[in-house]
Length: 459
Length: 175
Image (cartoon, rainbow over all chains, first blue to last red; front, side, top):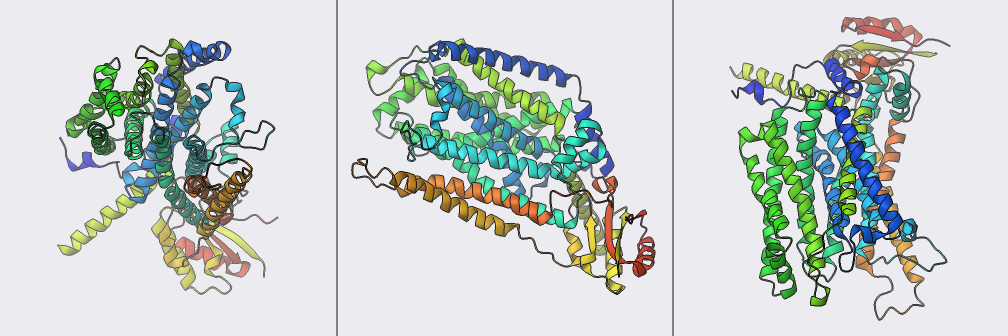
């Protein structure tokens, strides 16, 4: 079955006009499932908004927040969404610098995922505050309250890092879309034409514009890589720089970064499959590309597994009895089912990706990617909750705390918010980069031609 | 002598490339490399073989943006911390360098990214009004070669473009 034609990432004889037509069609007429998902995401968001309104009016008590459980699912989910955002950087920036051209048909939606994940994560900062109406107190400006931020706090670094990352990600996504926005401008009418005319800034594809475009894209990609690493290292510092048992671990920053790349890759697989079907992108989001993404995910899963084991080992042999007790609590206490589920989903399920036949089997990949992300979400919850439930002093222990429906509702709503933003994006901005796919086809055809000529000369 | 612009549309880059090369070889009086602009649906760095290397200065903006962002961040943070002089710091430094470097690093990147965008807009000449010599096919699959020529050279240039299988020649309308 596996002949060489099937192994190609993309069909090289595809006409450029056809690429424009196919991608433009995705903006106009997706399959009806799109609207079902859109409605589902809206319903989920409404559940979240309803819970937030209730929590806003009554107070954090309805979320079952109490001392010592002060962060709960909100901060766990915040870390999860920050982690998801690393996928775009991986696909766009890291693989761009490595000249991995198979990323071209799928990097645009990964970049969008980065931006919307960050926007979703930001919501939880506000949601977890008791008095959300006072959030402006955190903004550093001279004021009569005498409040000034503590520049030595990782929480402040976090705010700055996320702001920088969000700003840079939006810019990266927008700059990279300009040539495609010009294509949209040239092929639409009405309000869409007006919108794309404004957004494409008068792009005409001149050699001067392309030269500057390429350099800019490369420079921002170079900035994004250390930025992404710094963002999740700083999120890890929120925990690692505290004195709480189970958190004060040196390997937390690389562990967090690996977890972020891992969950991001798993989410790319999920969205890859959804977009491929919804927008009829079978020609561009091909099985060989899915295969490569899955292999990348498997490699990162193994890095995460290694760092996870290192964390357990350093706690176990570290002679810090409090951290060790937390670890034992995780494995045997009330959180044990979730902790074991996390280890299973994060370290065992990825072995499915080691088999080529499974990597190309879409239903298996869909289930596997969802399980991987469930594992990654549980990982964040298992970082936050057990430490709070089993602190230094026995009189602070509270093993019976369970998040209320309000917490679950808001977490659920965040997926709706992300889904809504993402689905909206895919209807307005091309989720497959048309010019990059053309470049991919062009360069591969040239290579093939040179190869044939070389073989001819040799013969 | 007044100049006029024409644009030839080609089916592929190779034809456009050879047309440009021959135009330059023809030694048309008053016509230089700078009078040629390539419009294409993808980037063709190979065009520099005939048009010569054209410098990009975006990285200068990046360098100074990053430097400005980092210095500004450190100065602002250190100034804010210095206002705490009257507070007891318990023997700790008033301006602690290691934690301040984290925020400096973030602002270094933010400054670099923002100024890179500015450099891109200036370098690429964006935003701009769309030229009258534009064809939607350029964003699809055809290559446009825009020439800025003196009136007397117009016919020779058109003939040369036709020799290289130009699909269409568009002329700028005189106002």
